[in-house]
Every structure is written in C-alpha cells, then in structure tokens.
Length: 215
Image (cartoon, rainbow, N blue to C red; front, side, top):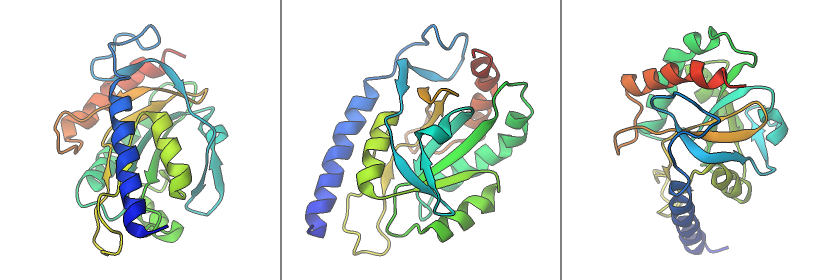
C-alpha cells in the first residue's frame, strides 16, 4: 500500500476511534464505588480477541490479561515526553501497588504502537530500563488498531514514516483491565499535554485499593 495512503487511513480511523472512546466516559458505575479520580466506562468493556507479541516474541492474547489487574497504556520508545514520564511515574508507585492486599496481582503493560521502529529487542531494553517486571507488547497495525479501539483508546501516525523522526499521536490515559479481562475505565491525565505528574500517579495509587477491593 502507498505510504501516504496508509498514513491517511491511520489518521482517519484514529480520529473516529478517539471520538467514540470519548463517548464512553461516565460517572462511577456500581462496579467501581467511592473512587476519587478513576473514570469508569458506563459498563465494563470486554477486550476483543487479539494477538500481539511480547518482548521475547511470544504471543500475548486476551487470555494473558485474565487473573490479574492490568494498568495498560499506549506509546512508543521514541516518544519524547508522555511515555517516559508515564513509565517513570508508574515505576515510582509500583512498590506501593505491589504491597496492596489484593487477591490478584497488579501488572503494568506498555503497548508500542510504532512497530516499524520498536523491535522486540528495542522494546525489551526500553521497558526493562524502567522496571524489569513491566510487560512490553507490540504487533502489526492490523492487530494494534482494533485492540486500541476495544480499550477505548486511539493512536495516529499523522506524517510519513519515511522521516526517521516521525511522531505518533496516542492516548495518554492509563486504562484498567480487571481479572476477568474487562476494561473498567481509565485514569486520565489532567493536563492536555498528557504527562502523568507526580500528583496524577498518586491518584492511581489512591484509587487502586478501592477498585481492587471490588472483586
């Protein structure tokens, strides 16, 4: 497919997905009570079947999301601000998250939406730089797009990838998947630039004990 046409298609579907995703934010439902910052979807959203690859090139599917709480977000290793900030902030609160008294473990998953540059080896080095327990995933766009949409998120490559320094626009929210593989909602950064400030990370830490207790 012509590169310019591909980029145009990417941008169009990302815009549509972003509009649809924005429509799914609502006040806390009966499934998530007494949270202060978490934004639940009106009803939990089942993650559509998918198949991505982890940093060891092993398949990762919807079944791998079950039996754990998953804090998941989109990004790419060449990201200049949002991604490294989010990774660092989640790493900063990770010990406290692991110390919570929960039935199921809490995992952090970073999904690269830049498969052209983010090889499994590069993604592995990137993720492990922040935390060796974080999980890195990627895949082809034909798999990444529907996966992102099922989470209520989006991404778009708005320029030619012939430019080695191209940027990727993507959702900055951190979505939460419950142990049955349903997306409950998201933690959305307050500021439009999307970075998770220390206070934003602390908001995740503040609400996770409440959410994980509603098994």
